[in-house]
Length: 101
Image (cartoon, rainbow, N blue to C red; front, side, top):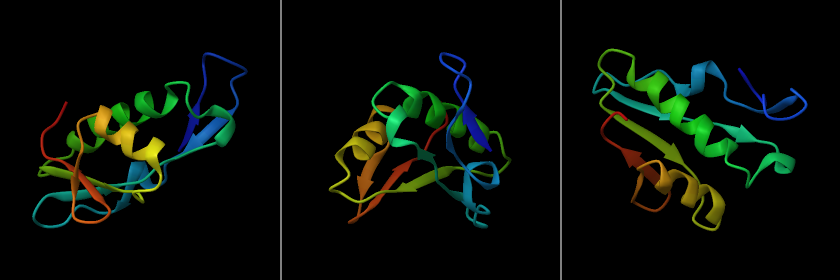
């Protein structure tokens, strides 16, 4: 899936594959998401908008009770984006959100 900008020139600005799932949810209801935003479109609110929509989509699947996203601690922009939409740090690199929007 390509994230599309309706605010600008309607070009692809990023992606999330497999409906945003990095892999199918586990039998315990844990889903892991992944996304990418082109550097030229970062810092404009597109990432927050995209991750909120992605979370809504993932939590619409029956049985999903925990969503995880992985980023490196030195990727401050990604850490902040995930924190803004309700994630918290778990372990060294994982951030998790346990309730839907």
